[in-house]
Length: 194
Image 1 (cartoon, rainbow, N blue to C red):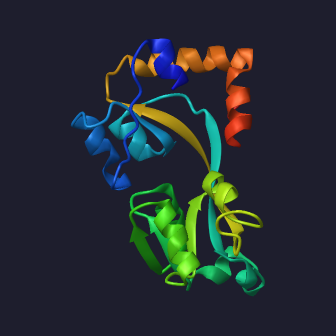
Image 2 (cartoon, rainbow, N blue to C red):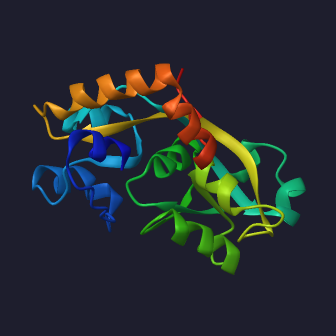
């Protein structure tokens, strides 16, 4: 919203039903930017004009808190059933772990519900979401983070050749310097790339 205001445009939020098709939606002009939680990957760099990284994130394994002691390391989890958002960095992390039972679902919220309901034994989701929704006093109080599998960086994706990438990079640098992004990072509990 802050960027849109600065650019003098109206910001409209759109939920991508299938995260694996985010670049198709960008190319077909269903959306103008892939913003929320887009990990900078080789695929992203090939399919979009990607901003400088702005948030540090991680992919984490989430499971029932009372099962954590049964799985002392990531290696011991390979045979579990993992729910993952289809086409996500979480899915990539589960594959890299060597998990053999991966259940792709629509989004990270669905992955958490799979674990909460017992349909899946674990899920791989963003650390930011896991911190916001799991643990004592939160929506999924009986779920907890078992392990961090990867560290990654979020960027903003625009169509190839877009002049928006450069403008967003300039604004991010300005707001990083004057503390504007620090205030937003505190408000939304994310870690900025410094």
